[in-house]
View 1 (cartoon, rainbow, N blue to C red):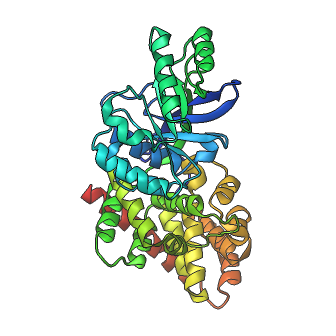
View 2: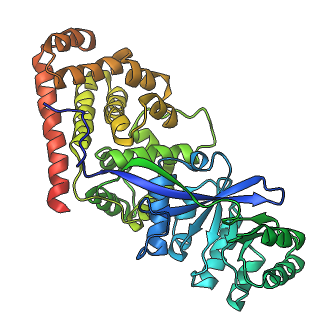
View 3: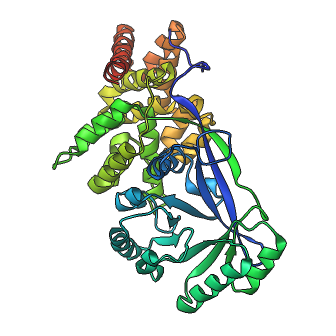
Amino acid sequence: MLSTQITADMPNLVTQYIARQPIFDADTGLYAYELLYRDSINNAFPVGTTDGQATGRLFFNALMLIGIDKLTANHRAFINLSTDALLEDFPKLLQPSSAVIEIVERADNIAKVTKRVKSLKQEGYRFALDDYDGDVKWEPLLGLVDYIKLEVEEPIIKTNMLLKKLKRRFPDVKIIVERIETHEQFTLLKSAGCDYFQGFFFARPEMLTYHNVEPSKLAVFDLLRCTSRSDLNFDEVHQRVAKDVGLTARILKLVNARSKSQNLVITSISQAVIYLGEDAIRQFVRVLALSELGVDKPSELTKLGLTRAHFMLLMLQPGGQEMSEQGYLVGLMSVLDAILNMELDVIAQEFRLGDELSSALLNFNGMLGATLKLARAVEEDNWPLAEKLLETIRPASEIEVVYNAMLSARQYGDDVLASIIEQE
């Protein structure tokens, strides 16, 4: 029988790392956090990782699942974007008010970057120029960005002179100085008119760790193929997302991030896909492909979620498409507590599942809850309970309906995993 127990060698349950370094104002009050990609407990940017890879993994392994507000305790977030990420669709996965986009010092194609920044600023996005060194190539961007970041130079008078020159030319731009290591540096920079401060004198980057599930390569490639056609088929997108727990979690979080309404309640994967719309779905998939996510093989826990989801869909089909789709989502979400190492009540709140779906997931209430309980009873070989629950869910049906539905659901879970393993 299937088991919900997590094993140490489950391949797609991974520990993710991120660092955040605070940025302070002149009164040493916390102003913002810069979010920094890490791939291990070693608190340093990983050797051999490109800016593009770091950007993609930061977005999809942290921002999309954990959320900016949680990572920054509701303070501003400064996020580094590679040139490709900036010119692609990464910024559109953020609300304009949620983050400051940093243009890294290794950026190229400055003409294209400038054009992109102008366009995004019209939509409310804010920008910082990272590690400005006075090079003439940055001139087109200086009047567009909201922040300019400098690194401390020795003697400190060099940094002060550059700071004052920038303040005279661009009085509305805020200056942030990084790598401050002494009280004397802080005092001199403050007297020169520096707006914000960052460095080991205040705080080293703080490491945060969390558990995550990554989408499979096949699911990502399938979505990429599906969204590369001129006419987007939302049902195809829905079907592909529904087969991958990692994609489902990210799609739901993306809906929440983009929604300006606190009253939005998601009750199915198809609703989430349609809510996002064609442009957002295409952006999501392109960025996902760029980020090189995916693992070699999915876990048994993923198969359990797929099996439960399909079983609930089949058992609830007499109640109509909406009911069966809600059942699929509840089944898939029922394993996320183990995958993400989070309590189910936190998951229900974070993903805005609404009262009905949350009650089913947490307390087995209603038709959805009874069907989830039935799925678990079958997994545990508790057939007396299964027969009792069937009387509530489908009173005119014989127990063979449950046998057949679970047989079909297990075949569905096996087939999805087999297709991924064969093609990766």
